[in-house]
Each structure stands twice: as C-alpha cells, then as structure tokens.
Image 1: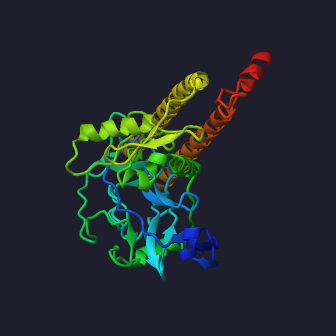
Image 2: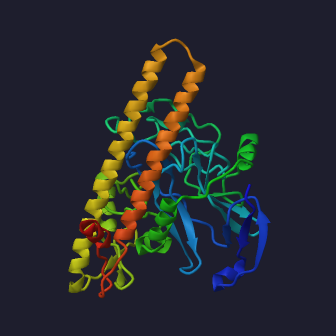
Image 3: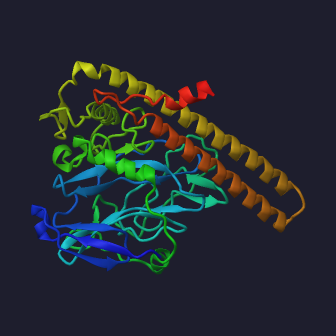
Length: 387
C-alpha cells in the first residue's frame, strides 16, 4: 500500500494558513473547520455503456475560494475489469472535517457510512458486480437502458445498516455514527488505484463553475450529475431537486445551469431566483468562432464516444456468444479459465486503444488562436494528407 498523508488545515485555514502534515492510511486529504452541506437529491443519468461504474457526487473544498463546491456524480469507466469505486467522504476528527479521497480497488471499502444512493447505502455497493471482464448492473437502484447494456439483473436493496438521510459527513455532532467493519478494514489493506484522469477533470470543471459553489446554489446545484465526466451540458445532466419539486422543473434548472456557465473573462451578477444561481453577461462578439469550434468539438466527441460504445458492445456480444457455446459443450474448467483470460485481455486491449484515442482527441482540441479561442489542431490531419 502506498504511503499516504493527510494535510491538516486548522482554524488558520480560514485565513489561508497551513499547519502540519501527518501520515495516515487515507489518500491525500484536507481538513477544514467548516462542515460540508447536506447531500443534494438528484436523479441518476442513464449508464452510457458497458464497463461504466457510478461515482456519486460529493462536496469538495476550495481553499482559494474559501467555499465548498459540488462535484457532480458521474459514470466512469473502471481503470480495469474487477475494480470497484469506494467514494470519498468527510469525517470529523480532532477539531476538523477531514476529506478522505475515494479510490478504486477489488472491494468497496469504508466511506463513512454516508448514504450516497444508487447502490451506495453507506455499507458496500449493491449497484452491480463484476463477472470476468463484464460488469452487471442492478436495475433496482441503477438507471439502465437495456437496449444499450444487456448485463442487467434485479435485486431489491434493503438498507438496514444506516439511516436514510442527506448527512454528508461521518462523526461529530450530527454526523453519521458509523465505524469500519472487518470487511472495510480488509479492503483498506488491498492495492488501490487513485481517481482516474476523467474523475480529476470532473473535479476541475466543477471547481471552475461558479454555480456549483455552495454559497451560490444553497445546496441545490443545477448540475448535480452528468452522464459522462466533465460534460456539463446535454441531456445527460440532472439537477438537484426538492422532494416537492416537479421533475420537469428540475430538468429546466439543469438546462439553464449548463447553459449559464461563465468563463474566466465573463462577469457574473447575483440572480434572485431560487437556488441563488449566478447569471453571466453575454460574451463578446469575437467569441462566435469559439462557440462554433466548441459545437464541433462536442459533435466530434459524441461521435467518438458513440463509436467506442458500439465497439465495446460488439466485443461483449462476441464474448457472450463464445461463453454460450462453451456452456453447451462438455465441462472444461481449464478451457473456461483460458477463455475468460482471453476475454479480459481483449477488453483491456480495447480500453487501452480508447484511452489513446481520447488523449489524442484532447490534444487536437487543446490549441487556441490569438484571441484565446479554442480551435482544432489540424497538424495531424495535414501530416496525414502529406504522407
């Protein structure tokens, strides 16, 4: 297990001072004197394809902003088959709220007893499981489109171990009073994988969005969950709701929040509507080209995502056919093991190729012109044309 640290920020954090660094068993964490807001209530976007695991939203702290901000829940491709996500959580300890970062591992560990929903009841995960290279989704707690994902089962989740509420931290006054079980302590000793690049990017875009700050949204972020990491617009975005709020009204707020994002150069002013969202002024006219480029980028990204999803589904269908033919043949455990190992190799090979494609895509669209507007990097296309 990697040596990890907790960066403890005492009351002096509120004026930007840092105190000591001490070793701990968690990942790099930050402690503040101000407790996180309650968890918002929101609907889960539909799973975009096979191999995605739900990472619930959480409140993160920005020392620069001196404010909490909401990191929307999202579907994330597991780093490799067999790994599950243990969510991040806040816990009261020795005068401060300590943030424990989430991680990937073969088993779900302790996450403070926080009921994040969608299978994360506060103990373990009931939203799905891995069988070989394939992830199976529990449709009783997961939003699944069976025309896209066929590995589906239905098992009722009974939550007897934790209190169903919106409390977002463990311990202290008003926190969830939960302690790690033996299974949680065992999971903590396993090899872990830190949050992947998509999860880091989700946190970065959340921190840069003024409407996701707790001081602006009063605990009801207009972008509470996304279908894919760092994609804060489109039909895959859902807004936080009140129990009394109609679904249509929440979706309208989600669309408004996604369209109302501000850039570093845009000015913002308070809006007296519910939730205290920020309303940005119109962008300068010279950004029209940038908007067109952004539209092309979104279209190209969606086309690439759709193709990758089809490739994953095609691979899954071929592997399912092989598994069915094997089941109809005489029992051969050695042969079954070899087949599953080959399936795992194929799945990992496809994921590696998609990761390279995603990295190349980001590089192509990372170039900006003299006005600071993003434009597509055509150097690779020109090289291909001259070859």
